[in-house]
Image 1 (cartoon, helix red, strand yellow):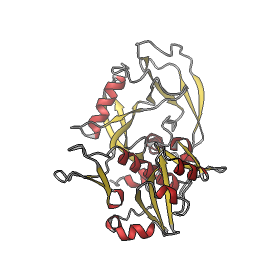
Image 2 (cartoon, helix red, strand yellow; image 1 turned 90 degrees about the vertical axis):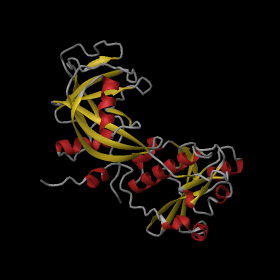
Image 3 (cartoon, one colour; image 1 turned 135 degrees about the vertical axis):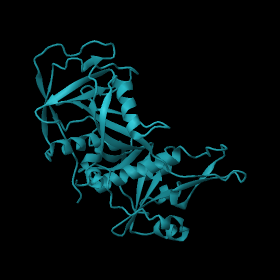
Image 4 (cartoon, one colour; image 1 turned 30 degrees about the vertical axis):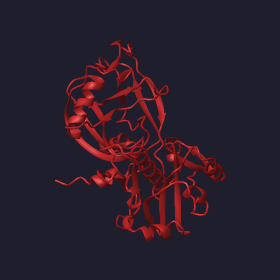
Length: 347
């Protein structure tokens, strides 16, 4: 039996397999950190309110600033060491939104935008760097106060630790990420899709949710399938993982065989769920470039992207809205097309 190389699988996913050296030992070297913040071989990755700084003009690219260009920002905020690649060291910085001087200085280089909207337009290394910076800044924003005693905490070790300022407490806090599962539930040549009521028209996804305390990732797969769609699953297969910085998750991708195909939207998180069939397993998923896209590639052996024709129509019980009504009553299937965008290969 040949072993599955899960790293190779996960490396296909956007944000994953970054070649950045995280410089774990250097985080504790305050002298080295200070020197790097003066070096021309350093770049600053600004993040404000969960958004990355996008350079003006075309093509779409991240605004990665030299220490000189970011001098006003560095005087107002504490940098977070991200790592080094090819001699260039990168730091993330949380931009204070109410500092007029900082805002004016950064406006020269770009504007802040959602990573979701631009990551497929930048190279994969830069996209992973932006996601990494976004996740670290998010963690710092939510740990300004000690979770044990409520006192203010301070950044330490290059931003990879926060220390409580209360001498009687002194708790040390470290960055965390939230594990979540995303699972393609299938029965024969159909898979289950659903949509939340807040999503834009036409957006659907396979089932996903957070892993809760006291359960394995596979437990979460079974629970989420039942809670969101009322579907029992049998065989569960792990496929791949992906950093998912929206806002700060690790997505664990699975496939699961349905043991039942009656849909019941128990927790009403979804407004609709239905089965989808294609001429081959679809590589389409609303969570752009998420683990579910690459799951299909390993199912089919296909390496192609582009237009995928899928049929929607006679789904029998795999077609219910949250009020129990059938959403597709006609038996004549219609064809729809969804354009796929996988992003760029490593440069």
